[in-house]
Image (cartoon, rainbow, N blue to C red; front, top):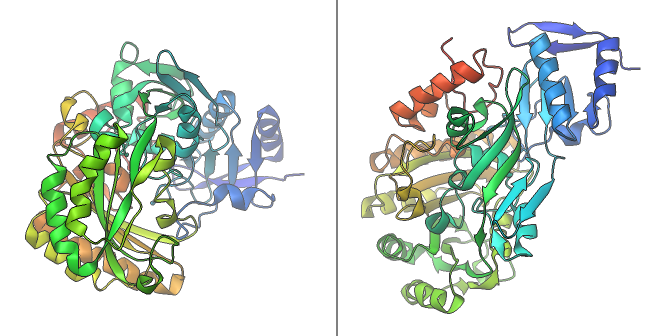
Length: 477
């Protein structure tokens, strides 16, 4: 027997759901309902970021659309505080909430690939690794994700960076249609012909407008790619980053690349004598012909000569999404800071190296990504709700560590690093890289006119802010 259940509401109070209500609701589900006393509860509330330790009053692990509709209707009917969990990879931890209801989509992993049309319909519990694994069987790939364990849902709704971005654009640029359950419990389809305002808003506006139960993506012919990374001694990073900065903007769009500062892990491909040393890394994926890719990558090799290691090699496109997975393991404490860069100046490089030299954790890293000068810039700023399309580079400061007693120094390192980089940054940020940084930083993820339009969409589709556990667009109604 379940007994009654006290649940937080959107008004700040708690209500009691009686046993009959809970039993009736559970009986209506095809999926699972987990209470704190159930054996599956702790696994269902775990997230990528180990700093997040929230305890929902109950978790609904949906098996399909009907469960999502039932959960939203229950939440709206009782004004329950509600969070939406896809795969749980986002750093902020908005996927779960204390004392409220969590709608968990992680078991919804269906997909249907249309090879001739080069499209795929995918459910929100899939990761990019799972999606691209199946697409690879047909020589196809979707555009989202730098690592394989990221979920397709949250990444796409915030824009969707990935290794194919310069050639094929953001994940949301390749989104053709969504099925979505809105805050009033209605199931609607949004695309270029139907519910066009909603379709605009979900492509960049995050999870503010409803629960996506199906994504239809355009996918692309991608077979074998040239992918990997090469390492440099920290003393060569200044010259290497200057070269990478200048070369990457003129490289073919088939190449998406970045540079990172990190501590050399004890990996088999890294010489044992440099394990634990601070190093630089050039990483990239070339999605054209491998022979041509070798020519494009060669200048990086020559500039690094001799590199500490070089693992650029041909591999299936799906495999290219996982070669950096070990740098982003589940179960670590995470604190990230990010900004879109004006330009990667020589002074900016000096500041990066100065502050990285003080890194307190061997798991932490700093990544400078080159996402522009390609497909992302050819989409009109008004076509989607993506906040900024006119950037070439961004900086991502990833602080990762294990022990909670080290929280303060690791968070302080990331914040100090970010502060030092602000003279070289724009007042702009990629929304998926935001932490829990307040409403003004959410606004910084969008141009002013885009944010105002998002508020209008929020007023229409979620005027009570039922979907509030996200980078929140606050309604005015």
